[in-house]
Length: 320
Image 1 (cartoon, helix red, strand yellow):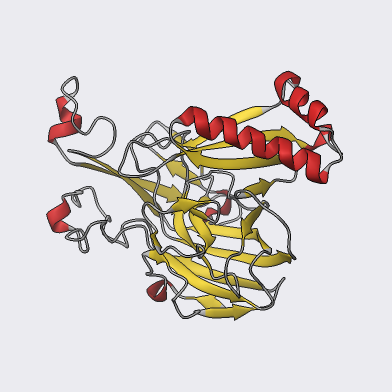
Image 2 (tube, rainbow, N blue to C red; image 1 turned 180 degrees about the vertical axis):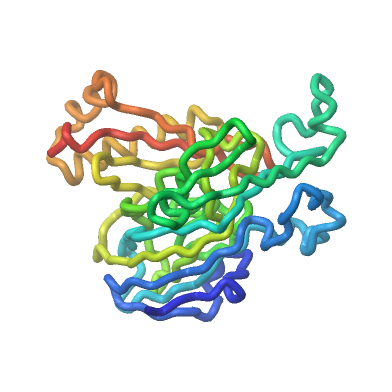
């Protein structure tokens, strides 16, 4: 099986000019070994998020959130849709979260000075589950609090049309740093293609994350990801979308949050009309009345240029 090794997964931009690290056929499984968002800087609680101590933080934007790629998909053309089918994510034996001055919404807090005057790094130990691996393992937040590891890929996408965007704040219809917990094993991630070969990248795995990733970091970790890439030829796509085994999720990144919610819902309505034979009237009324329609707020971080990320989700049982 072809693989991008961790030492090669150190790109910090979605750049259509990059030489492919892999060339794969549609449907071919391959692996990418990823770094955590700090490229290995955070290992112990003594590793603080002090910018002067972090390699690459003398740049703007800083060199953080590394991604592996690009992967060239044979036969992919502009106007196609690339479908990333995530087969496996195995995380490392720990993850981390870092807070401190000027980081996140309480980075300048006067109510809780410890959040704005001190740098704090938390290291979360992972222990294997019944399989003997981290696939069904446990994340230990403290001596008394733990939960199942629920890994997902935080940064994923194809090279944008004309722009070169960084992996730390790049976002668009093509993907980017969106931190969507549903970019997970068993799900199908739809991405528009702007270049020959699609030029696919991913990285920034999280062992778990709460809605909004409020502090700006979650359980950041290294991982090995196995996936395959499929093609939908010349298929229109307004923004990234996700199919789980049980639901459809239309995605949008925007500010303010209301715009992200409104546009994601419009994308879902368009999806129902275009592919599931709904009339516009029925799709419009369904999202307003169905008790299982949900709005997911995946990422709502007040950091730099990041937009807020929302998903409009509807169970498949209502559309089959």
